[in-house]
Length: 368
Ligand SMILES: *Cc1c(COP(=O)(O)O)cnc(C)c1O
Image 1 (cartoon, rainbow, N blue to C red):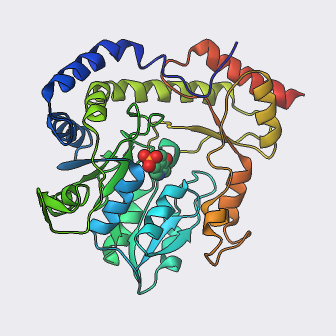
Image 2 (cartoon, protein in one colour; image 1 turned 120 degrees about the vertical axis):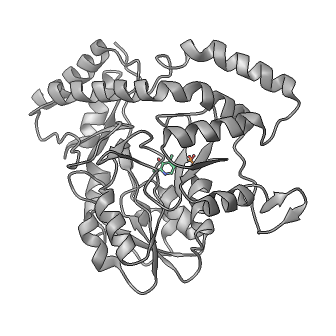
C-alpha cells in the first residue's frame, strides 16, 4: 500500500463539473479582475467565518502584511510573534519594518504560550500575531484579554485553522484583522495562490480593499502606496465551489485524527497532538513528536508512507534572519519541536485501511 502525504482525490473529482461550469461563465463574462466571483466569495467566506468582512487577496503572506499595514504597524513598533511558526508570520513583520519579538510556544500544544506575554511586553509593543498552528486555535481568550489590557492590535495568522473554534468562536474572528491562506494544501485550498483577510472592522476592510489594488478606491486615484494583491477571479470561483464542502472536509480530518489517537496510543516515546482546554482543531496537520523523528521518517518512507516536517528550521535560525540578534539556544522549545516533529498524512479521502497502515508502520518502527 502507498500512502501519499497529501492527495486531492477525495476532494476534487466530485467538484470538477461545478468548477468547470463556473470557469465557463467566468470565461464568457469579459470581466477578469475584481469582479462578481471575488465579490461572491468574499460574502460567502465572511458569512462562513462569522465576521462582517472578508477581503480577497493574492496570498496568505500579503494578507498578513496588509493587515499590519492597515492597522498602522511599522518602523519602531514591536510585534510579538511565535518562535514556532512558518516563516510567513515573521516575514510580514519584517516587510513592514517593525521589530520581531518572538515568544515560545507551550511544549504540548505547540501554540503561543499566553503566560509568556507579560515578559515580552515593552512600551514599543503594538501588536500580537497568534498563529493557529496545525489546525488548533491559540488560547484566544487569554491573548485577547492581554491585548485589550495593553491596547495592542491582534492579527491572527489563520492560514491553518479555517473552521476551528476557541470557546465557540471561530479562528479568524478574534483579531482586528486576520490573515488566511488558500494555498492548495490548506484546509480550504484554491488551485493556485490565494488568500484573504477577515475582520469585523469596516474601516480595516475598506483600507485593505484599497491597499490590495494600488492603494486606490477609484480607478487612477491613489490614496495609499498600495500593492497588487487581488484575489484572482478564477480562484475565487473555485473557492466558492469548494467552501460548502469545508465543514464536511474538516469533519473527515477530525475523524482521521481520532482514529490515529486510538491506533497510536502508548507507542514508544511518541507524543500525539495535545489540544488545549476550550480549543478545537481541524487538523490541518497531525503532528507527532518523537526523539527518533529522522529514523521514523526514513522508515515510513521505505514503506511508501509520505510525511513532512512542519517545520525543520525555526525562523530565528533561518539564513534569511542571520542579521537578527538571535542564535541557536535562544528559543529551546521551538528548536526542540523543529528536531522532533513529524506530520502524518491527514486529509479527506484517506481511507481507514490507509490510516491503519500508517499506524501499523509507526508501531512496527518502535517495535524494531
Ligand atoms: C501557508 C501559511 C502562510 C502563507 O500563506 P501563502 O498563501 O502561502 O502566502 C502563512 N502562515 C502560515 C502559518 C501558513 O501555514
